Amino acid sequence: DAGVIQSPRHEVTEMGQEVTLRCKPISGHNSLFWYRQTMMRGLELLIYFNNNVPIDDSGMPEDRFSAKMPNASFSTLKIQPSEPRDSAVYFCASSPHQVVFEQYFGPGTRLTVT
Amino acid sequence: DQQVKQNSPSLSVQEGRISILNCDYTNSMFDYFLWYKKYPAEGPTFLISISSIKDKNEDGRFTVFLNKSAKHLSLHIVPSQPGDSAVYFCAAGLSGSARQLTFGSGTQLTVLP
Image (cartoon, rainbow over all chains, first blue to last red; front, side):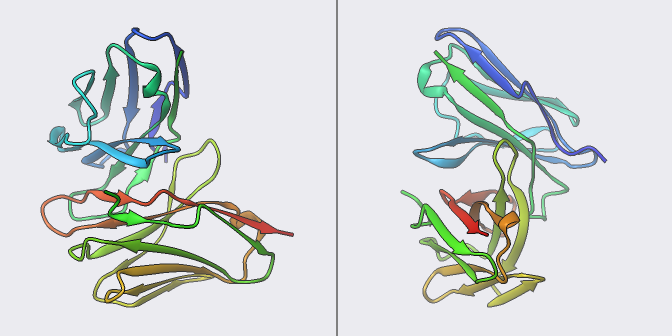
């Protein structure tokens, strides 16, 4: 049974370029979370979807960040334009339903913006 | 303003001894707590959890203790094994309509053979 799938695993891009990170949650899970991990701030929640609907995007740092979930099996996190301070590991996690706290994480995408 | 704090960035323990990882929180409304383990180049994996109605939960070598009055929880691993070497995150959540988690900054545990 596949876990949460993220792509790409590594992304190196130049400042100003658009970056799109992709996530496929575990089948049947209806909650999806995007996190960013940095040395300074640890694991921060960026945005949370339930049944494909964004519930809380208060963690999205600024308008350069956007996230979509067009269907139950796919989500994207886009950064446009990217900046060096966006360099981090971005994790996607999914959860079986809204009454469960336990989240299942993907392997992450390591983003480097030069 | 960090609501969940892990004040020790690292901990080294001898194999076979007890590892104790600590976590403090400031929001007294948190009512569910989890520990995650993370190996390099992998995502965090769920380890053990505890509801605020309990003060202890045990699963094999792992035990989580919750002290609500002190707003403190700890993870005990006994006996520690080299394969336990990883970063451990504590997380806290609020019951209600959402199941968002607030994570601590993590503690790197190294178990020495």
